[in-house]
Length: 87
Image (cartoon, rainbow, N blue to C red; front, side, top):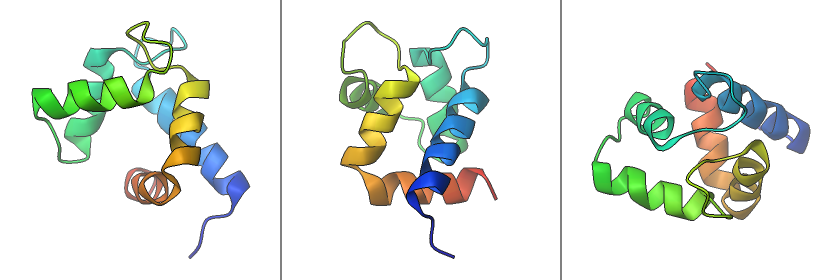
């Protein structure tokens, strides 16, 4: 089943809420590490690399807007993540 743009946005929002454990509206490095571990990737280097890729403003946190921007730049990757996490 293909995901359309609305499905992807809703999926990103659900993923964001799922990994924003403390509900502060941003994903920390620790929360990102937990998210990647759930996807089968837990290397500290990979976590740092993903944080650098997604954290556009370099404040050490991922906002929903940054996650959506990452999704737009990497649509196939994010569609796969959404499918795996939201099954």
